[in-house]
Length: 491
Ligand code: FES
Image (cartoon, rainbow, N blue to C red; front, side, top):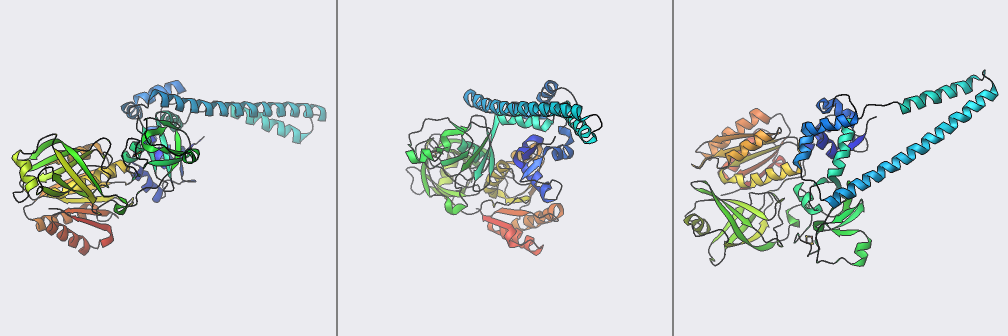
């Protein structure tokens, strides 16, 4: 018999991005009932998930050997306590179902025996009683017959133990808690814009209300919830994880850049990596207790301690899901004192760098259409942050990246783009060179038109002004509405 699972869980079970299933829902290939997908439909669309007909134990052995099992093995299991709680809960549910089934079975057997008695006393010629008896006997035989197990149902049960599914109210967003992640870490990894401050249980900004399910404490917290808050089910998301396989919480999420607080954080240089002769990657790390809250695609101002003139405005090149480790791409620029000091070797690991921000509204919309990212030179920084966020959120069916290099340093992170293309079925990258920004933008527009123009996409464009203006004009001339094109000017 088919089971019903959420789209989120369905994507996990068949191993495709959630956006791909959502697109199949929109096209009518998948029909939802109360927002749920039938495992029967999934098996029809993804028959490769079907295992050989055999006993349950054999099935589980096969699951361990196939790609689904590999995905499971690659994840880190939750702590023993959380695992024990989830297993205990699942055992309780199974015991409940078993108890109900035994009662129903006893009821049906008693009814059948009474019917036999009636039909004996009424005589063999009472056709209606005989028909009822036959119907009951046949129904019972069918119910007791061994049926093949729904493989997706088995997988779902396994997933419920190793990872928990969290639904956020009122947004309806969903995410999975895997390994030893707290609710906050798991939510951020999934691209949610949850409210938080310190990340270590001392500020209270990450309070969420548990509506349904159970949580387990993972971290000692100094912040003390009031008795009324405790009674209403509030917990700190940074200090708790899901103890039940399904959990519903209530919390407000940031809607956009206006909800990001202005912050000032003294970070330290974790590393400097030469990506090309004139391009360096700067890796800053925030204190454990004071992380930078930002949205993918936003920028900050960096200042070197003790050098008042050494400031630079830069787009963050990393994902908000790792809010402690901030990456930036910096080009050699004799006119900028910050860059000059960096390239002269005056900045060393461990040095203090102050971060002010975040700023900017070049951020992802809650749109589930295919995404096209167009970068030129160091415009790749905010684009990389957006791509990492989109991959974490897993809500779009496909991502296409076009990156034009006009500098001698070329595609200083070309390997990263190739790695994405190789690892992800729904990711394509096209890397092009041209010394002229405008001609390069025109060639890029032609490539976009050739690949994607019959698709309803959303565009994110970042780079020097002349490139952005030229590409925006080309897209507009080709009929793409301004609402579908988001632009960011970078140096
Ligand atoms: S983020 Fe500060 S207490 Fe959770």
